[in-house]
Length: 354
Ligand code: NAP
Ligand code: GDD
Image (cartoon, rainbow, N blue to C red):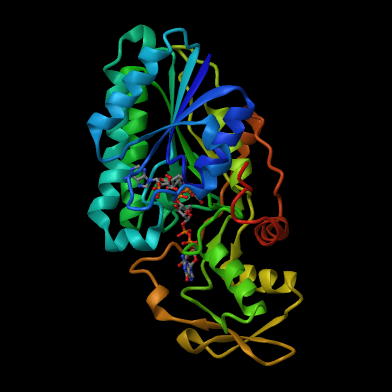
């Protein structure tokens, strides 16, 4: 029996990863946060009946520990138990508003799980594999281009600083205690399941609203930063591959970058997304006065609002995933921004419920 526990199961990546693992015959467990709303798990509603969910929070050591112990005790014959730590306060801009909470969840939360694993009996611990959801944000104000597994980190947000801690504590538990614990360093990945406070879905959804007459224009912050975008479905496959590396004492598992190897500005994303709906955007003005107009109608469709600027910005990200392609044989289906944009436009945000 193959077991998997996913923190962050209700998130974009958690939902795709759950689908992938269920298709591979894993028994999948996850924690969900208590909220005042009963049905806030729309991304996993279609597979909810196949999942074992329990309330939990990355800030609550006891709950995490009880759940992990309970899974082990009730499945004594398990072959492998994979733990994917995807839970995070994952919004970079919001991390400047709630830095302490972000640190607690994204940084200390990882340590809480690692400690539960470390203190298990050796015979059980040896069958556990841990994945930590690291991020290209850790490269921050980048020190070299493209960024790979050897590029030094230079984080510039509370989110990224917490993730750097998570990265090193995961590595330390691997090297110091021999745990099978790996860091994925994943560049931006999006999908039709992204929420609208990330820039890609904000643009896609803004265009849909403009076309149905409920919104006049989209307000954005820095449109000249560059991102290396892929599709979440391809990236969760890479996470799974990272936990399938051979485990030998002399050859501990390794960390991997997942990236598309292409970088584009937010401005290009805007132009391509409007173009998908047959609208050409023409830019005029500068700085906060810059606007994007529909080249045919002359109507303003994009404005700059400084409220979306960040105290520190990651201006440029471009990943090199050669190691993952060569060692893990990782491949990705969504190899252009156009394909990604098309999927974001045409797929409904939530899979149909059974
Ligand atoms: P997401 O959609 O924001 O999902 C985050 C998940 O974490 C949700 O399930 C959320 O639960 C859960 N969560 C948040 N705070 C929690 C807490 N205190 N206790 C327990 N669960 C909590 O993020 P994502 O895009 O799927 O990303 C998954 C992971 O990969 C994150 O760690 C993110 O930082 C990392 N990452 C993402 C990208 C990317 O481009 N998407 C790139 C690199 C790394 P609720 O549903 O209750 O909010
Ligand atoms: N969110 C947002 N909203 N971003 C905007 C806006 C806006 O209105 N206008 C411009 N941007 C710019 C941001 O300043 C940033 O440079 C870029 O668009 C991308 O922002 P996000 O979509 O919020 O993503 P992110 O790159 O900050 O973070 C995502 O990728 C990381 C991996 O590099 C998140 O998924 C993180 O969790 C992930 O670690």
